[in-house]
Image (cartoon, rainbow, N blue to C red; front, side, top):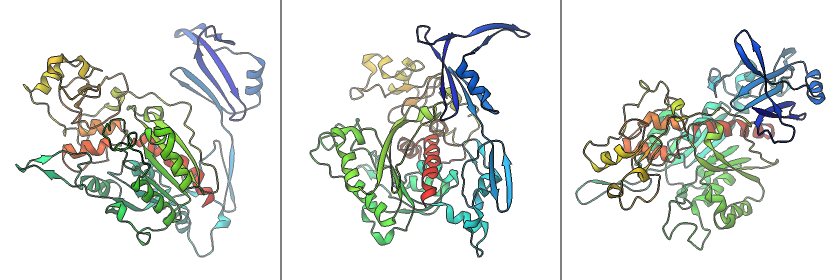
Length: 475
């Protein structure tokens, strides 16, 4: 194989990656013999590489699929009171209340130094360290909170104190025979029950459009997934944003009202990608005009690019006062497949909760035709439902691939690789990277709806981290 390399003296790193042999500067990976047999050797002896290695004492080498990265690790000295503590790698700035001391965040254990890195001169003689750390947490408001899948990443980060959350019970309709009718966002209050169980009791069950300024506490940061059916490509009705001749969107207007009322210095909006693309970006331009005192950027993030087993693209709009916000994705992440996500799932909570496909039914007959990685297009024409025209129906996941975007698991009949049933609750949760201690409340249909509307945990954890890094210095 051939490789190329790039030296970044600003970030103090060298990246080595695979390339075609006809690329300018390409070098062949050599071979050498050793006790374990023939092994590949990356042998770069150029002057710039020698100078890089000679100028640094401590260089970290990481090997990934298709990429190798050499990164300088710098010694850091931190003053704790009158004592100087020296350690061999750079620590993140961290502020938290003591209840978060033992939290594990993104597979990294929080250390004592993470919690106590501060300038002691900022602490008044009348306050304790606990008081100081609590003061430094980011006061947060959550709107359109759903089951709390977005908030979970912020809660587990430890730097946020969620003061207020809001979502509403959606009506459950019944037909003339007393049978429950399905409708979009037909959740009852199950999503609120899930939020209270996993995130906290601070959520209120109320229509956001009825909120007034006196209902909203002061906060540093407001976030929420403004309902997106109006912008979704799956919405083909005349009321969709693409087909309408108006940019009126009361739910967005109310979200921005709450940002102003709370005196927040930053906000985050999650939505489908078309929110910023439809009609030449009309809605995004309107948002920037209304919030002209904020610097605003956005980033389309696919959860698989942050190590999730699901391919799910959403846009995140990040606004800040006093500085320009940034959303910069990491260069390298470990690829995670459906097989990885479902590892050791057998005894996980709520894995025994799933939608059945009754043997002998048309759905069961269809499922038998769908191979691993296949969908409704693999089913004979005579068995296909006339109204199911998209390939996001009757899907069987592939072990070695990412899952496609999870929509309603029940309605779209999303199946595991080798069984003729719908995904279990835990399989769905694993595809959103949620830890197994996140427990859903409600019926299986409601839980499928909660998952459909959710944000991937790896995405919310990443956003919580980078927003705190940018927001805490200006609080």
